[in-house]
Amino acid sequence: MPKRQSGTATARARRPSTSARRAVGGQRCPVCRSRRGVPIVFGLPGPELLEASREGRIHLGGCVVYRENQQWHCQKCGYEWRSSDNLA
Image 1 (cartoon, rainbow, N blue to C red):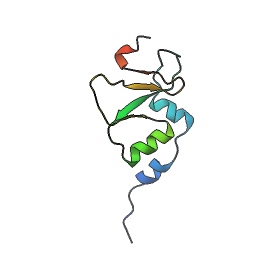
Image 2: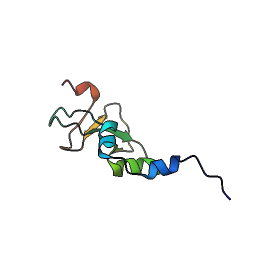
Image 3: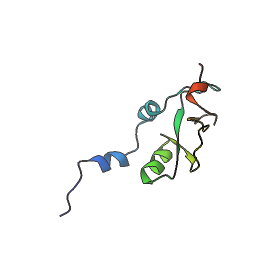
Image 4: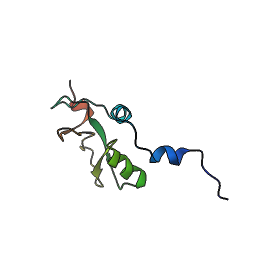
């Protein structure tokens, strides 16, 4: 019988509650002021990042990484910004 890992695979497969999803991102958008800002992740996504994107915990930014890339994405209005741009 194969050895079972300690519940981590099961925990990752569950969809987090709305409050848990907000807690992961939660950055305030400087345009619409919502708290639906999530981190932008760059690079080739694996299965875990694809799942996180489907759940709304991150935003996939593509495979090309530049120093000037934005860091946050607003799920409400679509605006993207760097942390240093958020002066609010």
